[in-house]
Image 1: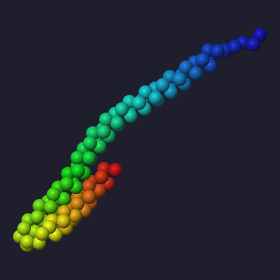
Image 2 (image 1 turned 120 degrees about the vertical axis):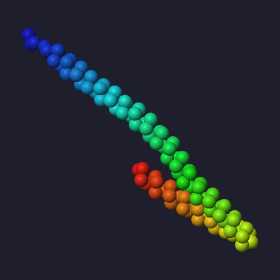
Image 3 (image 1 turned 90 degrees about the vertical axis):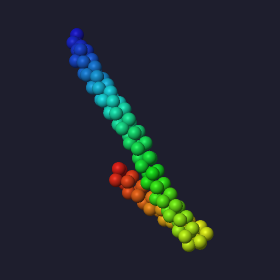
Image 4 (image 1 turned 30 degrees about the vertical axis):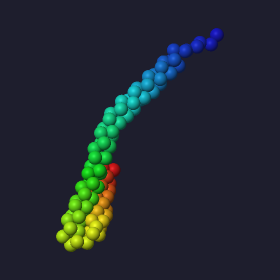
Amino acid sequence: MAARHPEPELSEQKEAFLSALRRRRERHERDVRERDQSFWSTVGMMGTVGWSVMLPTAFGVFFGRWLDGVMGSGSVFMVFFMLAGLALGCYIAWRQVAEKI
């Protein structure tokens, strides 16, 4: 009769299963931690990008309106400085996002 040794085989399977379970739990905990950080980081980045684009654009509009009022030129300067402020704001936002990535 051949001797059967199911114990070592079962023990190896059990150890492999527990090891896989530990890795999966650690990966899940890491994902939960990083997801929370990345969520708030994303919210903060959206606010920063929004303000970075909006402020130069608004400044350009107000400065252009003031200059149009002084020069009596309709809305030529307002449109020009609005577009210049928008371009500057997009550049600033792009630089901030590029630093974070």
